[in-house]
Image 1 (cartoon, one colour):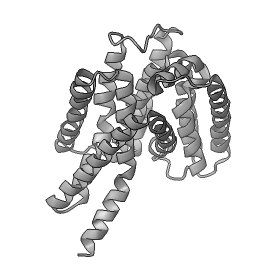
Image 2 (spheres, one colour; image 1 turned 90 degrees about the horizontal axis):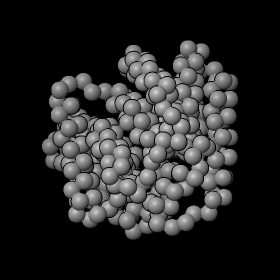
Image 3 (cartoon, rainbow, N blue to C red; image 1 turned 30 degrees about the vertical axis):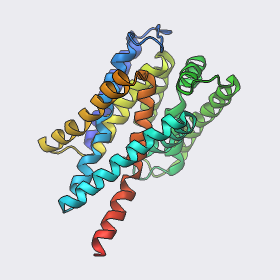
Image 4 (tube, rainbow, N blue to C red; image 1 turned 120 degrees about the vertical axis):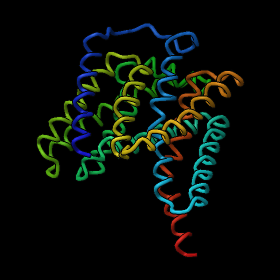
Length: 293
């Protein structure tokens, strides 16, 4: 896995440096314009980005020996997804807060999982920064996105506080990584380069553009590497469980219910993240029940 991570790090840095070279600051972007590039970003996130969550289907299939147990695990997983969607549309505020909190934990655990000796504080610092990084450079844009998702006007001071805390966590991540003795200097160097390049990208790309790039090409690919896609059957699994999410998001939520792309992206990711983080617990409970019979 380490070799695959190294290859991913190389290509991520090359692609990032290319984007830094060609990107101009303050790219025009209107989140209320459904004919804008948001439609393309929606498609990328709902297909390529979501595919690493669909890899949970591979985990479920390989975890349980009997088909009935596999089917039950799938049903529980999907039930949690739909409950998450209901929660979002009943209370977008709770849904957004949950998404942010889960991302702070999940991004660090997933992105840095190849560093088995990395401390929890390093991973939490990474996750916090990756979750809220755009607020440092595009505070007003992030506020506009949150206002649109929640359909209300948030106090600007909230984002000033988030900006300050995020800067603190950047320093925390770099300091904790520097003093950590369980990570090799080579790993530290590459990770710092990845981190700084990602920060630079966040300063150049509008928040949704940056999130799409980070979520799909850094976090998503790194997660697929962690899971391990080893056969053509695994790829078929990914496609089989990604396409329904894409079609459901577009044809039902967007086309029929006229929900905005922006709301679909964050509500679906929130619901899928809940199920994704609950999967180990689902597997343990079902396996325990299976062994006790």
